[in-house]
Length: 482
Ligand SMILES: NC(=O)c1ccc[n+]([C@@H]2O[C@H](COP(=O)([O-])OP(=O)(O)OC[C@H]3O[C@@H](n4cnc5c(N)ncnc54)[C@H](O)[C@@H]3O)[C@@H](O)[C@H]2O)c1
Ligand SMILES: O=C[C@H](O)CS(=O)(=O)O
Image 1 (cartoon, helix red, strand yellow):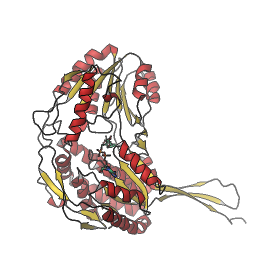
Image 2 (cartoon, rainbow, N blue to C red):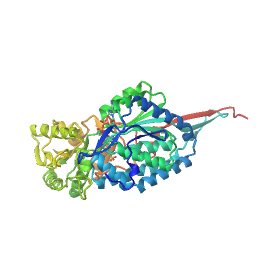
Image 3 (cartoon, protein in one colour):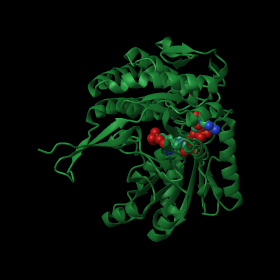
Image 4 (cartoon, rainbow, N blue to C red):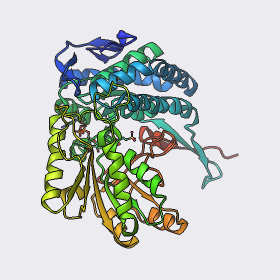
């Protein structure tokens, strides 16, 4: 993998402003199987060291003025923009997404650093009307302290900045453990942080034994917030571990997004929205359409147009021009996709497009469209996390809202309709943290991203994203009588 700036390719962890550890665990390109690099296999001891460095750096970082923190974050943002192409190539190489999507992620990830660098200057307190004439009530919002962050492989850059940017803006310091599949992008962010003048110990990155590192992250007395993005089972485990020390948790977990197309929708817009919502990152996003419900009146015309568009998606190495679908992250991911297709077809679903491993071999899979899918199939209740579009038919609005809400997840939902009454009725009835209406893309740093039910708690993005990393304190100032 040839970068323009080869210094971004690191095989060591970034702890207390130093690059530490010996290359150990292989990082491979899912498209080619090439070993890209090796990173340290850190464990409990190194995790505790990193937290100690973050703790030591906290007082001085929190004591900086908001403008001083904002200036450092601005420089970090500008370096991300300057190195966009290398960051995108790193993401495509270690995660597999098409280069165009990786460039989009680099922009999206950098936007959080830009936004929260500005937001740092707007973490306001307040004064409240006092109950006594000799006292005043002041409300402060103070940084929570050391943040331990654990992130997934599907967005190797954005899931880190979406946590670390608000944390740093608030005056917190951070130790982050990226996914073992995609550590290189995280380490490149460490290189840029160092160049931007982020002080030693403020932003730390450790790679290695997830279980051991996670146990330290959730039990170390200096850690005040555990911020996690990943699967619901792991989120539940971390929440249990963090409960022992009553640590604040911010959880961005799994999804099972319904995508509803009503008879009154703009059909071509709905098809285009469903394609991008389903097949972005090969279906490996927490907000991908996992279930596509189409109303009776337009079912046949929708599925014909959708199947044709899915069949036209170009599959290949994400680094090659015009590729729209790269490989899945691991063979285990392919197994899950095949299990869902087998279960659905055994119960009566029909494969309209794809359905098999791609002729390119490895973890490449054909973009797949299943028709006649029903609620009793596994794909209706489990997150597929792959390029399989499950299409259901429905009759009434009440019926489809019931189907859509019939899940323990509550992250994102989508629907297409041009009926304004329906837009408000259905938008308010769907039990999700995010509802995309007449749009298959909903993510921006300007909005509070997050779920309800077993999709997690807390929000990332918008001014709400700062709340996870600040504590509210009030001071009652007495003795002010005449
Ligand atoms: N809600 C969101 O914003 C969001 C975003 C991206 C991914 N996700 C979810 O993440 C899942 C896919 O990502 P994944 O496969 O990386 O998830 P995962 O839960 O397997 O891993 C996520 C992170 O947790 C770490 N981890 C795994 N076991 C651990 C343990 N016992 N202790 C501490 N850390 C541990 C992993 O190394 C990785 O860094 C999907 O369910 C997807 O929906 C959610
Ligand atoms: O996979 C989960 C991500 O949060 C999706 S997005 O990048 O926010 O759209």
